Length: 304
Image: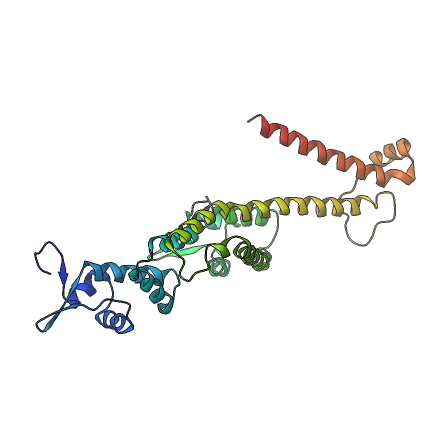
């Protein structure tokens, strides 16, 4: 590299600084992804613009773009249409979709949280699912992308759920959640992002507006799922409870009941409302209790 104010590189130097191979640089030139170097005598001279372009290509490849789509983006950039907005949109989409921060856990801590006995098969399956990630050179340490997810698994295990059942449930749940995420993206693309992304690649201003919209809509998917899950859990849990409580005072179906009311409680209710209305009374009392707890919870939130 010369000592001039504007840096100059031989192809070997460019490869060293960019992390690309000489062969890759030449292939990019042949594809039109990289501007031709300046010919000086028998040598080709590259500049910082070539280095910046190679870094842009590497970044886009890491984000999953194909060389063909990268070429379209770079041609738009060279034609005067900004690439900054597109890269901002890419960064926004690839940014974190949760405020949760990853943590580390040792193998000993992991064993303690799941029964105290090492289970290599369970660890392997957790790594396959991405609940744990191995740290190179540290076989006794793991990265935990979602500590909340690991905590849920530990609570279920402590409640008596076997590890294979937990991982099987996670696989099933993940497939269903991915369908929800896919549908949400299709919905927002059709009704929101289509107006920003009509051109391929989009203009700099359209891409910047789309990135702002991603930032605004990012929490909506989780908020919607949280609200609907809470609604569904209350609905089905209440029905499940009522189904079992409805059998109080009547012959029980095969299998254990979810809740067995004390005999003296049943007798007291019978004396109050009559034997024919025990189930109806219990259901009404249950719903009243749930409503009271909801109102207390809302009131406590408002006072914070």
